[in-house]
Length: 205
Ligand SMILES: Nc1nc2c(ncn2[C@@H]2O[C@H](COP(=O)(O)OP(=O)(O)OP(=O)(O)O)[C@@H](O)[C@H]2O)c(=O)[nH]1
Ligand SMILES: [Mg+2]
Image (tube, rainbow, N blue to C red):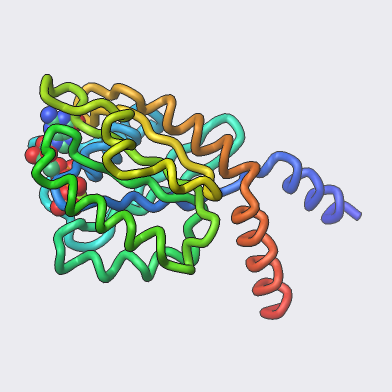
């Protein structure tokens, strides 16, 4: 009986855990953003920008909000490392795609990388958050301008938004976490991943 009540109590107070994939071409600022997120939402002090090196493996960052746990997976964006991204698609609840908004000469590379990500069936229905990063720089284009360039309007079916952010000064970080939690809680993909995890657990029992 105790275990029944304990199980119910645990179910009621436990926080849902979401997996968020951080993608984007090299030097977009993914790792710097992740460190800023960690600094703002957890007791872990983030690495300062001058100690961050290009990512080769996987960086993991965990934060908690009032009702959810978010696990961020940050991968390297160098051309030779992008083939690794798809290994993480199946388990991701949502995708953040980071673009260096101050570097138009690389927008085309970002656009084709994003299109390839969105074509992959393992990411079917995953909410998408496009970030126009480095807004602290005077020449950065706005999130709206970047969204037009990336032709995000054609993504009607998928839950998506775009936001101007800065991994240096923290602009936009609260807004992106709020949007992610809200959209992942309501997303059909979250439901699908929950059902799949339940099936896997019961068949393993
Ligand atoms: N001004 C400015 N520079 C930034 C910002 N975010 C990152 N940078 C700089 O951009 C460069 C690349 O940052 P990273 O965070 O390593 O980029 P990344 O996307 O993780 O790169 P890969 O790991 O190679 O895929 C570094 O020199 C950072 O200091 C930002 O918000 N503003
Ligand atoms: Mg990195």
